[in-house]
Length: 593
Image (tube, rainbow, N blue to C red; front, side):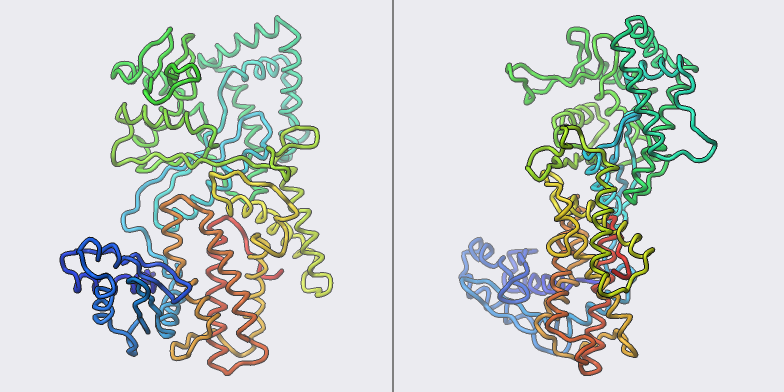
């Protein structure tokens, strides 16, 4: 397992060394290297350096070029020329491309380096509410969070998952009191394992019945409110009934996450209630340190830059005037736990952008209190809204919130139809394979549509587009992967072998250079918390492969032996890179489609 320096980093180092030699006073200069349409790479850093040194940029560029070895058998750079006012256009050798890719292919990690200084990240994502349906709004936190977990772990980061479920609050008084008076409402029909749908049906029925009674019966309302007090006081009977709601909800949650092909472990589910024992101490510490002050009986933290519509400061309310605790108390206690007990160096919260002000105030409060220091980073990975085709928040025709499970079922149904129709004239798949592929394509389509959009942006949920075989969809990528696997299966006695001695066609070069960028891409996606960059890279990879396959015969018409072997090598590395990238996004790649 060894990281492989990319061609870009090798070129960058050579140009930087030449710059330092030509202009010693510049120190460690940045060549500002980027991919270019005019050559493989372009270095733009000479202009700024020349201006700083009061030198002629073209003359400086020429002296840099003269000190870089090119064209030799062992040289990475084949050709370098000065362009315009002082740009460097750089072309790498075909040999360097294939040798670098061969080194990547020899490594289980495709040559992707581990982070130089990995830390511990606690990532808070996939946070449904107890006794409530999961809707389309829960999709983004789950999908984005799961992808970031995979990406960060791949770089060597220690990642601790936290699912901060909504399992506490005054609404439980009504539910618990109703269950106490109707003790069989959550009973299961049989001893067999209950389905997620049945669990949610039980909870929905109980919620509606308790709500109707709460709204119509004043005596029940009084008993329900008293039950909230019992819950918060830790009354054993009340807590036991509360636990039944949590357990029933978990059956439902896990069934939905399972449908999403996500692995949620019970120890990682630490809801609001998990921090109850810390709330009083959190408030005491804030008040004693002066970070929070009493205002009309409530414990508040004020900020100069946060004001309401009336122009007055809007505080973060940690404890209400009646003694109850707000969300802020729980979130601040969670920070204390995650940094102090779990050893987090980074906290990531994958939550709706509409909660940005809340988290801005929570993070600032934690810094003032000393629970977050300079060595600890807290980030809200804020996401936008899921919209319907009409560009408005996604609703059913009746204006109701869309149930997540219904949406996933429809995606799988649509995808299965697409897979079946595609296979009609070929007959390559069994019925079982069609069903399995439909599941992988449908769930992949939903995830990819979310992940191919920058998290902060809203996106339109359009199932027709999501399961399309063309365009920027997971189906397009999955078909590209399956096509390559088919090519490799049908290659006969030819094997994938790298041949650095060959001259490459333009489509081979383009594909090879893109494959070499996978490591840098992963590093960027991890540091910027940007899974959409992985999706964009994979789509471009599949597109470049399609061009390569069209322009460069791999199997038929049969190319010369070494050419065919080299092209099979490019095919195999493309499949491995596609497969790994899709796995990081939580999307499966069927071997046959």
